[in-house]
Length: 103
Image 1 (tube, one colour):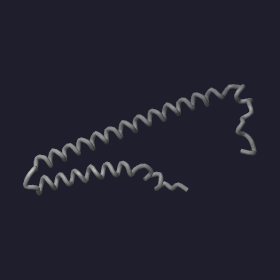
Image 2 (cartoon, helix red, strand yellow; image 1 turned 90 degrees about the horizontal axis):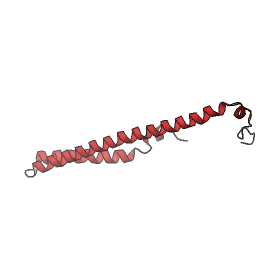
Image 3 (cartoon, helix red, strand yellow; image 1 turned 135 degrees about the vertical axis):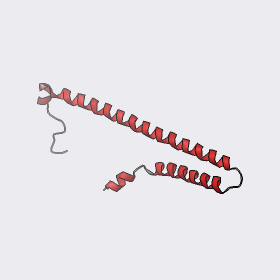
Image 4 (cartoon, helix red, strand yellow; image 1 turned 90 degrees about the vertical axis):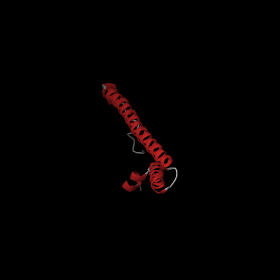
């Protein structure tokens, strides 16, 4: 049986891996910029590049959520249209093939 915890963590490990790797790289770049005697600017630039990449990933995640929500709404509208068209007298008098004791 699927629990609420299973549903919460389903498919999240890909995001945890990407965000964890990015944040880990930012921390390593910050330590490198702070403690390294050489290449301080390079570590800062690399950290900024990782931050920009994470921001782009966040924008992509947001856009994908909006896309999926629009797809779901279109599906709900299509189903509601079909369901509302079955309120005619002909469809109400027709035998439902799923109203069977063997189902």
